[in-house]
Length: 57
Ligand code: SF4
Ligand code: SF4
Image 1: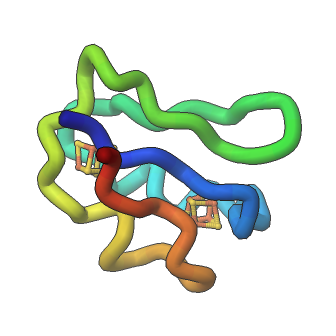
Image 2 (image 1 turned 180 degrees about the horizontal axis):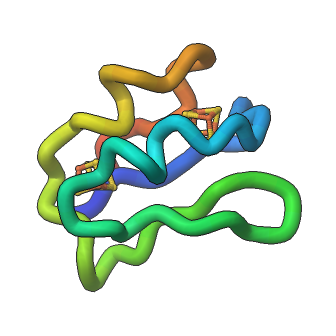
């Protein structure tokens, strides 16, 4: 299970600094989460100003 970053992302980069496993990186239009690394901790969602990271299905 992995969090995913929705299109609401404004590419501020705050979540990438908070992720304990460095699963978040800058993508083309927004930041993206590597599902192989994400541990589903929710730290990115807690700091995101626009609530873009959401629990995956
Ligand atoms: Fe990183 Fe946790 Fe967000 Fe997954 S849920 S991307 S491990 S901060
Ligand atoms: Fe995008 Fe939210 Fe991460 Fe900022 S904190 S880069 S808006 S997902």
